[in-house]
Image (cartoon, rainbow, N blue to C red; front, side):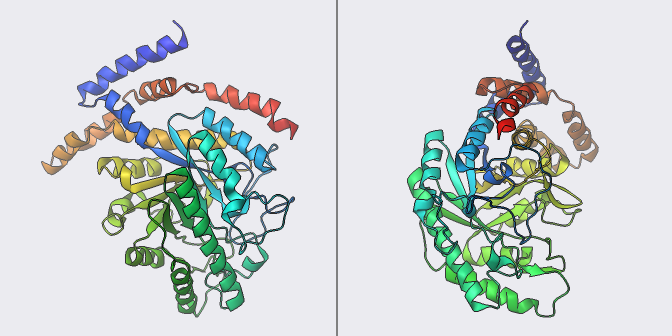
Amino acid sequence: MNNRELTEKAYEIAREQYSNSGVDTDIALAKMDNVVISLHCWQADDVGGFETPDATLTGGGIQATGNYPGKATSISELKKDLEKVLSLLPGKYRLNLHALYGDFGGELVDRDQIEPKHFQTWIDWCREQGIGMDFNPSFFSHPKAQAGFTLSSKDESIRQFWVEHLKRCRKISAEIGRQLGTPCVMNIWIPDGSKDIPVDRNAHRVLLKKSLDEAFAVTYPKEHLKDALESKLFGIGAEAMTVGSQEFYLGYAIQHNKLICLDNGHFHPTEQVGDKVTSCLLYVDELLLHLTRPIRWDSDHAVTLNEDVQLIASEIIRNDFLNRVNIGLDFFDASINRLGAYIVGSRAAKKAFMIAMLEPFARLKELEENGQLFERLALLEELKTKPFGAVWDYYCLKSGVPVGEDYIAEVQEYERTVLSLR
């Protein structure tokens, strides 16, 4: 019996076992088409971008660790890497691009001067790939971010520089959404904060609100652009206070009908971001997720199938919130094969959503409402050893991508023939 036959046979057995628990695996597989993940471009080159030939991170709360060989050093290399990644992943995806990855043709274009034309080749590439595209202003790795404040800077010339950058990024994002026919989610994260305890937190937050108000003055169609705001607990050089706290952005998002971005690496280690999903969606129309794997802090390790990610996925599926949640990845590990990190993290995120779809939620909810808490706990435990892997392998088989660990050899071959030659 060959591998395909084994995968199909295992799936038939798994389908019957799940059916006995009241779950239709065929329906779950069909619903996986609704789980669209936005792949972050910055995993392929350690968040360097292509503004200058020797682009490297220069501060502002971002740090990639490691020096594994083979990182992308040009737009063509990055596109080639992304195409390889997409060929090894099941289901549907998007591209998530930062502003410093524009196609500037060798010119020095400062961030307050970027235009849609600098991203046209990316738009065309996404159209060729049949995928949507999301976008991010880049408020780091720039001389005018070195003081630690951008949109909340008390230096008016610096603040206005970054407001203009944000305005232009919104215009670019709206054009992306218009051309590709799917809304571009534009996420705002700034590194603004204080290394030591400040006495005037309020002034910076007043300025941040003022900057956002100015940048959002122009209204774009929602079918072209969705604005999102991302908070953070602390960052490098901003350990004592971050201006864009969760309370600040959640309040702003509710008041101005913006998306709130929940990054599960941006909170206290004991906070569960999955627990925040239903609370936030009572007050905002949509969420943006940034899935990562923090170890002790926001260290941006590749996502793995852990309890934190599983709870996020389960809360979304249990409440039928997929149409109100935009799913993105956010990690950049330079210590291992970068494509391997992409694939492990992307597959892990998809697996979490598939597991959630294979849960007999109606039965579990009935047990809970009847006060049958032992029975609820027992069923949840038994679900952990159901043959989920057989369903996942069948999903990969039907998607035409490597099944199980077969993708490892594909990545190794790409490293030998492409990455090692850079």
